[in-house]
Amino acid sequence: ALMVALLPATATVVGLVVLRQVPVPVELAGIGLVIAGVSLHRGEG
Image (cartoon, rainbow, N blue to C red):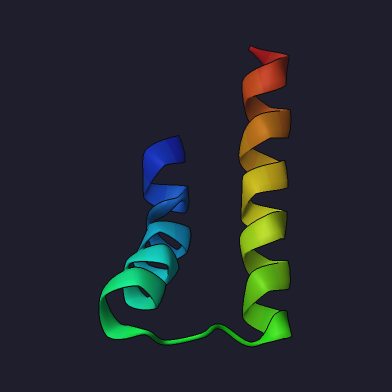
């Protein structure tokens, strides 16, 4: 389930590299929140 949470962040990176789509600051903040949530959840286990 944690890997599914990272799917939007992965899609954003692929969009940046392949399609040259630059994410706006709100999208970058969302990616940061997802990564922080995943790392906090992994730290509990």
